[in-house]
Image (cartoon, rainbow, N blue to C red):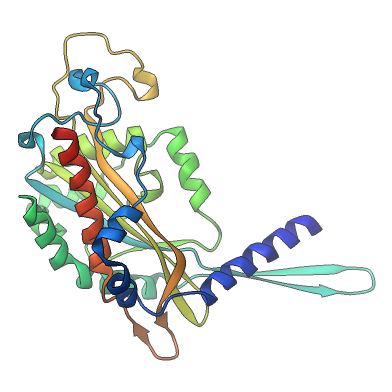
Length: 314
């Protein structure tokens, strides 16, 4: 018990120490580093990029094999835009002659304030995101645009995405007692922790894409961390899912149970941008939410995605 308490105290101290080292503002960060450096900082591995092996022409695997720009999506639906608050945990201890009492206070920003933050980030970035996708010949649609029939609205709200046991495990790693996830208005929540999961990719990339009548779907999640005085921006995760660009062949696909067979939907591309030192963007006493410049981070991630896709095609 004492070891666990010490570990929690150390983790809380490190979290607080990181907040002390926070940079001045998001705008200062992007002005100092620029889009090229942000692009290079996006974390992507072999499982979040399009495939390059010629054997993928048969459509097998978790990642798409693109051979032509004609295979790329023309219309993309932004299906979730959410913030997740890691929150803060305060541990206090009261000792007596025969007892020790441990008090744990878990805090997060709350749904109302979380929604305000999500809406602020969305309003700051959505027009710029649309323009960025337009540069790549893509129309990015928001819920008011792609939920254009009662049937689509109902299907979107009722849709249940499938996730594997591994995806659930990864999701649970990111969830703690202090966690809170809230969407911007009109969006519903899809867990970004499992965004790169094979079954989730098939579910979103094929099933939901077909329901909405678009070529691909985009998910955006922002990680923040708040305490009772202020809030800090920590990371962004973005994933683009779509139907398998290569038709299924009349053959037996090996590795179907492991996700390496033929998947009707795939993760086209995805990545995470994380800050070494969090940036303060909110202060309760001043009632301020400063997210100017966050659109540059989003756009830089999309640029990196298309760099990877185009490199694969070439």
